[in-house]
Image 1 (cartoon, rainbow, N blue to C red):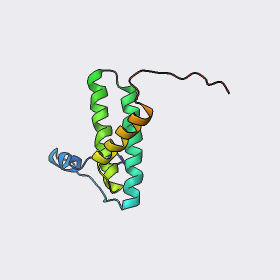
Image 2 (cartoon, helix red, strand yellow):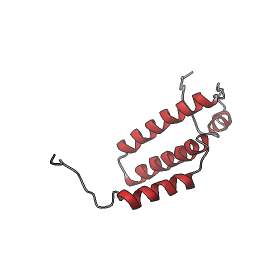
Image 3 (spheres, rainbow, N blue to C red):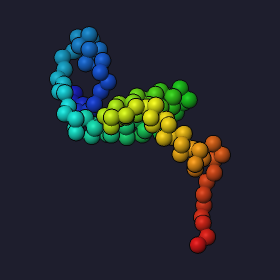
Image 4 (cartoon, one colour):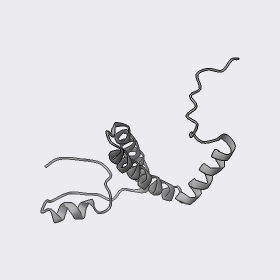
Length: 107
């Protein structure tokens, strides 16, 4: 039996059971849940970086966004609040639309 030891989406156990396979799961405590969410975010960002097509890139970004929703919830907030913070930072410091690459700054 393969060992995964990773956080999975909520319906994955049901999908595995419906395929006729046995599985073992556990419910994480709060601190471990946050740790595993962070690991999963890193994993999904890595998968985004390796995406070969636009479709694959968007699939991975959807996974990143799902993790953003979960992480904002565990921090007692919402994705809407994160969006407000993002918009405020964009207003103050700009976004990344102009593709500016800073090379150096003279002292």
